[in-house]
Image 1 (cartoon, helix red, strand yellow):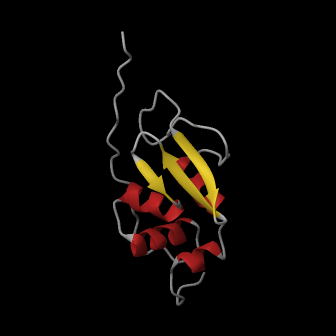
Image 2: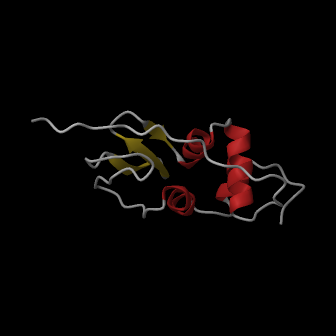
Image 3: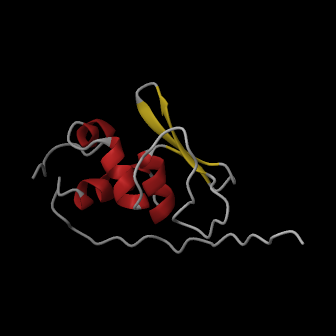
Length: 116
């Protein structure tokens, strides 16, 4: 465990791959050039995609629900700021000692109605 070190993006990405972080929180494999159903909300049409931008993975839900990297994803899921998101990721991947348990916020479900 690395308890006395600054917990930031660099600290985390030197120890955990972005794909691992995304797959941990989305519970789906990162694959490029295709659309997925968003596992975090009711999604009847595939709207979620992954893209490589400057050697980073960008996540986009084309419905407008979310766009960002793995750190932005944790910020959104837990309704926290960047530093706290880094702490949550570090705890979940056993990079630091767990001081507190965090729970994701309840995600608002998006309802889609099929046109008649």
